[in-house]
Length: 149
Image 1 (tube, rainbow, N blue to C red):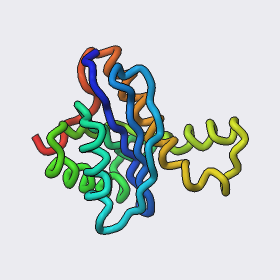
Image 2: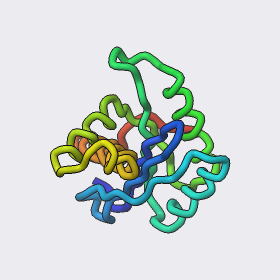
Image 3: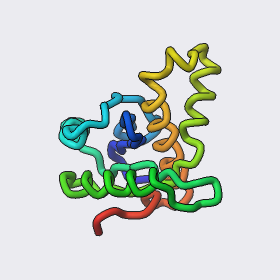
Image 4: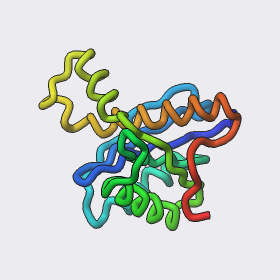
Protein backbone atom coordinates (compact mmCIF):
# COMPACT_ATOMS: atom_id res chain seq x y z
CA UNK A 1 0.00 0.00 0.00
CA UNK A 2 1.28 3.43 -0.92
CA UNK A 3 2.46 5.56 2.00
CA UNK A 4 0.59 8.82 2.64
CA UNK A 5 -2.36 10.37 4.43
CA UNK A 6 -5.84 9.67 3.14
CA UNK A 7 -8.90 11.78 3.96
CA UNK A 8 -12.42 10.37 4.27
CA UNK A 9 -15.50 12.55 3.95
CA UNK A 10 -19.11 11.80 4.89
CA UNK A 11 -21.31 14.33 3.10
CA UNK A 12 -24.69 15.14 4.58
CA UNK A 13 -27.30 17.79 3.92
CA UNK A 14 -26.57 19.48 7.29
CA UNK A 15 -23.06 18.39 8.26
CA UNK A 16 -19.90 16.94 6.74
CA UNK A 17 -17.72 14.55 8.70
CA UNK A 18 -13.97 14.44 8.11
CA UNK A 19 -11.47 11.74 9.01
CA UNK A 20 -7.85 11.09 8.11
CA UNK A 21 -5.28 8.35 8.31
CA UNK A 22 -1.81 8.44 9.71
CA UNK A 23 0.96 8.63 7.05
CA UNK A 24 1.31 4.83 7.05
CA UNK A 25 -2.45 4.41 6.57
CA UNK A 26 -2.72 2.01 9.49
CA UNK A 27 -5.60 3.75 11.25
CA UNK A 28 -8.39 6.20 10.56
CA UNK A 29 -8.92 9.09 12.96
CA UNK A 30 -11.80 11.57 13.27
CA UNK A 31 -10.85 15.15 12.38
CA UNK A 32 -13.82 17.51 12.34
CA UNK A 33 -17.46 18.13 11.60
CA UNK A 34 -18.14 21.00 9.20
CA UNK A 35 -21.54 22.62 8.81
CA UNK A 36 -22.95 22.34 5.30
CA UNK A 37 -22.84 25.99 4.28
CA UNK A 38 -21.74 27.97 1.25
CA UNK A 39 -18.20 28.01 2.69
CA UNK A 40 -17.96 24.29 3.51
CA UNK A 41 -15.73 23.47 0.53
CA UNK A 42 -13.31 26.26 1.50
CA UNK A 43 -13.22 25.03 5.11
CA UNK A 44 -12.48 21.50 3.94
CA UNK A 45 -9.81 22.80 1.55
CA UNK A 46 -7.90 24.09 4.60
CA UNK A 47 -7.99 20.61 6.12
CA UNK A 48 -6.82 19.16 2.81
CA UNK A 49 -3.94 21.64 2.70
CA UNK A 50 -3.00 20.86 6.31
CA UNK A 51 -2.79 17.08 5.86
CA UNK A 52 -1.61 16.95 2.20
CA UNK A 53 -3.42 13.69 1.41
CA UNK A 54 -2.52 11.41 -1.45
CA UNK A 55 -6.22 10.64 -1.99
CA UNK A 56 -9.59 11.90 -0.76
CA UNK A 57 -12.44 9.43 -0.35
CA UNK A 58 -15.98 10.78 -0.44
CA UNK A 59 -18.75 8.46 0.67
CA UNK A 60 -21.30 7.66 -2.02
CA UNK A 61 -24.69 7.03 -0.40
CA UNK A 62 -26.49 4.45 -2.50
CA UNK A 63 -29.78 2.80 -1.60
CA UNK A 64 -29.56 -0.76 -0.25
CA UNK A 65 -30.27 -2.07 -3.76
CA UNK A 66 -27.41 0.10 -5.17
CA UNK A 67 -29.71 2.69 -6.76
CA UNK A 68 -28.91 6.40 -6.89
CA UNK A 69 -30.92 8.73 -4.65
CA UNK A 70 -31.04 12.50 -4.14
CA UNK A 71 -28.31 12.08 -1.53
CA UNK A 72 -26.18 10.23 -4.08
CA UNK A 73 -26.28 13.14 -6.51
CA UNK A 74 -25.62 15.59 -3.67
CA UNK A 75 -22.45 13.66 -2.72
CA UNK A 76 -21.32 13.43 -6.36
CA UNK A 77 -21.76 17.19 -6.83
CA UNK A 78 -19.84 17.88 -3.62
CA UNK A 79 -17.04 15.51 -4.67
CA UNK A 80 -16.78 17.32 -8.01
CA UNK A 81 -16.38 20.63 -6.19
CA UNK A 82 -13.57 19.12 -4.11
CA UNK A 83 -11.90 17.71 -7.22
CA UNK A 84 -11.70 21.24 -8.65
CA UNK A 85 -9.85 22.61 -5.62
CA UNK A 86 -7.68 19.66 -4.64
CA UNK A 87 -4.41 18.45 -6.05
CA UNK A 88 -5.11 15.02 -4.54
CA UNK A 89 -7.39 12.72 -6.49
CA UNK A 90 -10.97 12.51 -5.23
CA UNK A 91 -12.68 9.13 -5.34
CA UNK A 92 -16.23 8.04 -4.55
CA UNK A 93 -16.60 4.95 -2.36
CA UNK A 94 -19.77 3.06 -1.49
CA UNK A 95 -20.87 4.11 1.97
CA UNK A 96 -24.07 2.13 2.44
CA UNK A 97 -24.76 1.75 6.15
CA UNK A 98 -21.69 3.75 7.25
CA UNK A 99 -23.78 6.03 9.47
CA UNK A 100 -25.64 3.02 10.90
CA UNK A 101 -22.30 1.34 11.65
CA UNK A 102 -20.91 4.52 13.19
CA UNK A 103 -24.01 4.97 15.37
CA UNK A 104 -23.74 1.38 16.56
CA UNK A 105 -20.09 1.87 17.49
CA UNK A 106 -20.87 5.08 19.34
CA UNK A 107 -23.73 3.41 21.26
CA UNK A 108 -21.37 0.58 22.22
CA UNK A 109 -19.02 3.16 23.76
CA UNK A 110 -21.79 4.72 25.83
CA UNK A 111 -22.87 7.61 23.61
CA UNK A 112 -26.56 8.40 23.28
CA UNK A 113 -28.11 9.67 20.06
CA UNK A 114 -28.14 13.16 21.57
CA UNK A 115 -24.52 13.08 22.79
CA UNK A 116 -23.22 11.70 19.51
CA UNK A 117 -24.95 14.29 17.29
CA UNK A 118 -21.78 16.37 16.90
CA UNK A 119 -19.51 13.41 16.20
CA UNK A 120 -21.64 10.92 14.26
CA UNK A 121 -20.53 12.43 10.94
CA UNK A 122 -16.87 12.12 11.91
CA UNK A 123 -17.45 8.52 12.96
CA UNK A 124 -19.15 7.82 9.61
CA UNK A 125 -16.14 9.35 7.82
CA UNK A 126 -13.90 6.99 9.80
CA UNK A 127 -16.03 4.02 8.67
CA UNK A 128 -15.83 5.20 5.03
CA UNK A 129 -12.07 5.57 5.31
CA UNK A 130 -11.60 2.17 6.99
CA UNK A 131 -13.61 0.54 4.19
CA UNK A 132 -11.44 2.28 1.56
CA UNK A 133 -8.27 1.12 3.36
CA UNK A 134 -9.54 -2.47 3.35
CA UNK A 135 -10.17 -2.27 -0.40
CA UNK A 136 -6.72 -0.73 -0.98
CA UNK A 137 -5.05 -3.51 0.99
CA UNK A 138 -6.87 -6.23 -0.98
CA UNK A 139 -6.53 -4.68 -4.45
CA UNK A 140 -3.24 -2.79 -4.01
CA UNK A 141 -4.79 0.28 -5.62
CA UNK A 142 -6.99 3.18 -4.53
CA UNK A 143 -10.60 2.29 -3.78
CA UNK A 144 -13.69 3.62 -5.50
CA UNK A 145 -14.37 5.54 -8.66
CA UNK A 146 -12.37 8.64 -9.66
CA UNK A 147 -14.06 12.03 -9.80
CA UNK A 148 -13.21 14.64 -12.40
CA UNK A 149 -10.78 12.61 -14.48
